[in-house]
Length: 240
Image 1: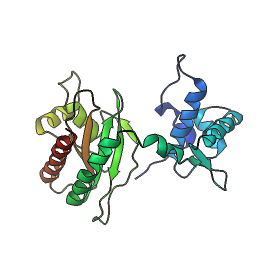
Image 2: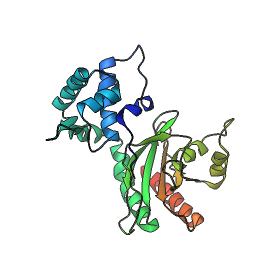
Image 3: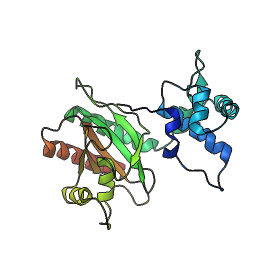
Image 4: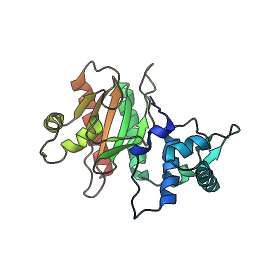
């Protein structure tokens, strides 16, 4: 389930340029981020607006990214992400994805829900690393890997925070998740969607990770939570 907005309205969501950064590289990466939010492609003019540069600058950036196969142009001159990104992304947490996929597929079939593996991206954000959709459900939630959300919104982030010592000002839901061993939320990432996530214990120094499900309706939360927690324990055992 994807939500899109006008290209020029999204600039504040990304990293902010500072004096220690390369302005050109920053704008090139902003173009890739804009294309990731618009899988059906954008024009050069759209990209110039999204990044906040002149159209000529956007054209040069796109040409450079094309040369490295990080984006491509279709017959309508719309730009989309290129296959070169797959080569770059393949080594990222490859072992984790390889081990997690069978566990996630089993959980998806058991719960008839979309299953997500989420990693902590920074102090304030989490990123969906892998998404597995159920094969035995007529209707399910769909979203792309790579999506970023605030750590204090949604079950995945709250489950990560619950794995840490109590902090002043934390949401009551975090304390509840700490007591129950899983976090549950409704409508915090996608409107009307329920999320249930549990922390996957990993070795010290490895990124905080959760496994969870996204569903439209929750008929038996304890049963779903038990399935999610069991998957988290199973994945933790396999990773160790």
